[in-house]
Length: 186
Image 1 (cartoon, one colour):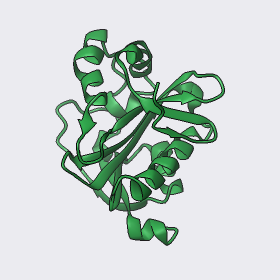
Image 2 (cartoon, one colour):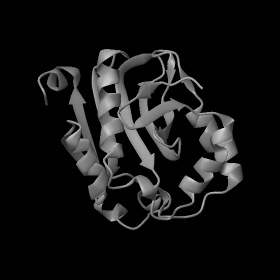
Image 3 (cartoon, one colour):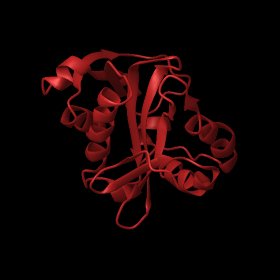
C-alpha cells in the first residue's frame, strides 16, 4: 500500500475500504468520541456510508486525500487517523489539521509526531499558506498538541450544534499558524 508520509514511529497511508473495522472500533470507544459526539456509539452503516466516503475523498488542489490511516511503524497496528485537508477543494492555501487516535496511542507523543510532520508537509510540499485546527475549548489534550506543533490560539467561538454534548457550553477554539510564522519557528 502506498505510504503518504512516514515519521520515526508512524506510517500515514491512504484509507481503503478494508479500514472499516478499525474505524468502527475507533469511533465506538466512548473516550475517543467524548469531544466528537459525546461518546455515543457509531454503527457499521454510518462508517460505510458517511465516514469512509469522507476519508476516501481526493482533493484536486493537492492531488492527495485529506485523511490518512495511521499505523504504528514497528507493529503495523492501526492507531487511528490524521487529517490535513484543504478547506476549499480547489485551493490548497488553507488546510485543516486534525487527528483521532485510539486510547492505546494516547500519551505516547504520536499525535504531536504525526501532526508536526503533516504541518511540515503542508508548508513544504502541498502549497499551504495557513494551517488551522479546531477543538472543544475543554479538550485540553488536543489543545496541547496544537500548541506543541506550533499553532497558536486564534479565537474562541460558539456553534449552534443540534446535539449538545458535555463541555460544549464552553464553546470551541481555533488555533493556526501561517507558513511565514512556521518558517520563523513559530
